[in-house]
Length: 268
Image 1 (tube, rainbow, N blue to C red):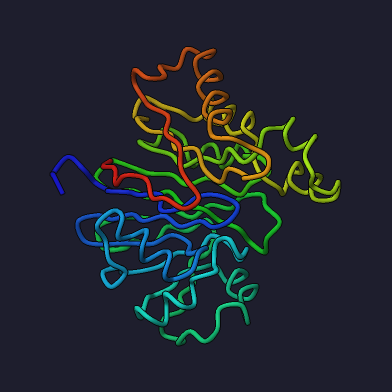
Image 2: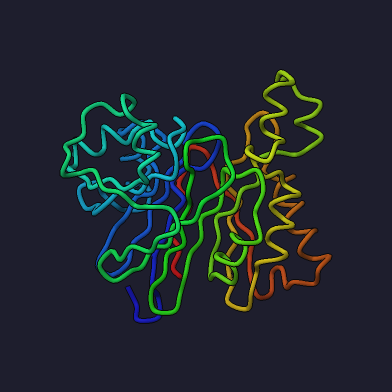
């Protein structure tokens, strides 16, 4: 890795069917969430030239299946240290199979842990899970933020995640597609609620508030297969940021993610 790059990142998978992200520094290789089978995660890592044997740790954001499906398998097969907050560990009890006690670690919400040459800050979000938290990664003045699976973004969280070099931000649904779609009303209410998911419009508005001079990349994540399409999510983000004259295509670029195909490994 060159001296100018603190991190390399690939969003291995992002969507309602499964989520996983890979981030590395000079000294550490970390997986965040493993919401697909161990076999699929291994193949996604291979797409960006990485091996699960080289991973140092696995961070968990919350206990929903699309984030933890492969956690137990990956932990057992590759002897991975797994980090989650106490409430998430309790919620995952019985969902992961047996993981050795020495591989289970607490990463409390609102704390910063140092992993080798990087610092990772956890922050709570508003989602219908036990204690969902996402992460901001720091090294050498550079940072990367993950923000999905939240019904809204509080002022407190906006302060924590402002002016990062790159973002993975939720663009879960188009409001009209969700309202007119086949989901039962109770599920629609859940998605639209304060503990649900950010819509295309919501995600775009959050970005207008937190984007800074450092920001170079915005990745749109956790798109619903039933209630969104990439082009619509991308257009909403682009148009909203253009309306605020925020330098789309000049100072930063907007990128799509995929539920079953890794993004190119990008440097920060």
